[in-house]
Length: 167
Image (tube, rainbow, N blue to C red; front, side, top):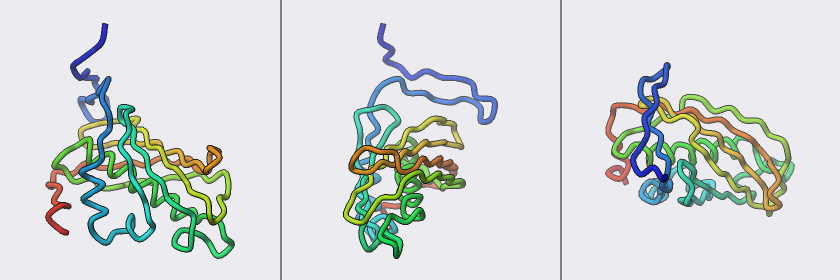
């Protein structure tokens, strides 16, 4: 039997946690808000996509003069920026009207990606509390090989999200 209403679980750290068993992660509004003004995302050429998978979103970024080290491979900082920005968009989409802030970003880089390639980041929400979201972001190259694995923790504030008003 399909479940059509959200399920609630009790989390010892943050109280009740909402789990959505079906539906997609639509980040289109948030993507339009941050790409319509000068931001790190626009400076590095990040592209964001909604997905059909629940609690999952996707982004791409080219390895070029904006994102590479002097050695011609992607900068670990650019990879972490992509992961944190994508997870932030996901948290904003999951909490309409709320402001979210990254409070921890931890990454492990496994493979270099040369200039001319594109990296793809897929973020999955693994903990969705009222105040804390934890995301796992896997970054791959064009060949589908794992480049970096990043954990992002976002704090959901009580302040309103006024991004669209700041353009």
